[in-house]
Amino acid sequence: MSRTNLVGLLPSELEDLAVELGASRYRGRQLATWIYRKSVFDLEAMTDLPKDFRQTLAERAVVEVPEPEREMPSADGSRKLVYVLEGGSRISSVVMPDEERLTLCVSTQVGCGFACGFCLTGVMGLERNLTAGEIVGQVLAANRSLDEGRRVTHIVFMGMGEPLANYAQTVRAIGLMTDGDSGLGFSSRRVTLSTVGLAPQIKKLIDETQVNLAVSLHATTDELRSRLMPINRKYPLAELIACCRALPIPKRKRITFEYVLLRGVNHSAEDAKRLARLLSGIRAKINLIPFNPHPGSEFTRPTQEEIEAFQNQLNGYGLQVNVRRPRGDDIHAACGQLMAANSEIMSGDSPRIMRRESGDAAHSSPPNHH
Image: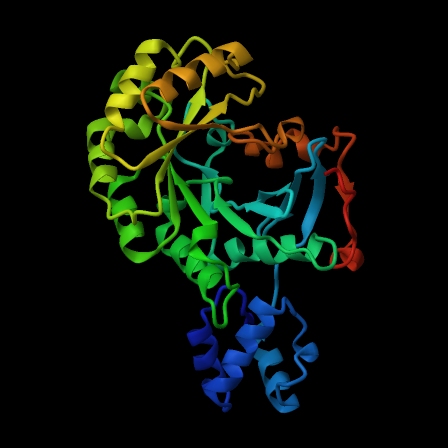
């Protein structure tokens, strides 16, 4: 009989397991604290658990988090962590330091089934959903890779896959991340989920969690958005924007609308006017994302002057606008580039690939490029 991986089980489920093994529920809570709060994965090191309970538990369960097969440091200080999952599939997460803030971009699927025209990950198609343990495991593994005393401070669900297409496991992972008692203890304000625009699941997410919402928009007409994002044929702009407008967003929060800038495609003065009209009445902010080039793409990045012109036009309509600085594009870790985990990065061509042996994964420190 295969042993259960405890990573991904809710604290209440660990309590149930403890009772099933003849111990008190309290032992399950201790177990959750060791795994999620203390990042201890060796059952024998959980010294306040009775020895007989640890022995019985070891026969039934393991505590396993993914080990980075490779780490790729970027010139800008970001690091891509490439993991091999059970069955041989590969996923990536990206660590992005910024002064005291340390953001981790996590994946929720192997590949992606939504085939956005500007995104390399979509070329893979969807292989499978990740489990909550595999999603949370990326956070635990990233923390293990950091210098002593450093921890991930913010989570963004912006890696491989569409989080809301893997709704149950994504929400379970969010629950573990934001559990302040026995989970990872992240504030919901420090967790952001990005979606291509699955309207029914967006409403459900806001009803069931308090995380920040980011919606991938990228166009101001249905004709263009359907070409760039096939999901628009199912949930066109009018339906998506109506959904966002109806969400009970607290006053201190805004919905982020993400907008990839494609040169000569979606950043005209008319686009700015239509975008302002679309978002009228919504407490919104706009993240402009200069396109991150990848081989085979028909698109290019606008010039700096074109980016600033579009930003200024949007500001003129009273919109809050940020331009996202590309992070990790030299290692294919930037927005829309994560297919590279399964392609050229794995070929070993990059001069910045770091291979880790299993024995030093927990304690080795990557070069500090910040």
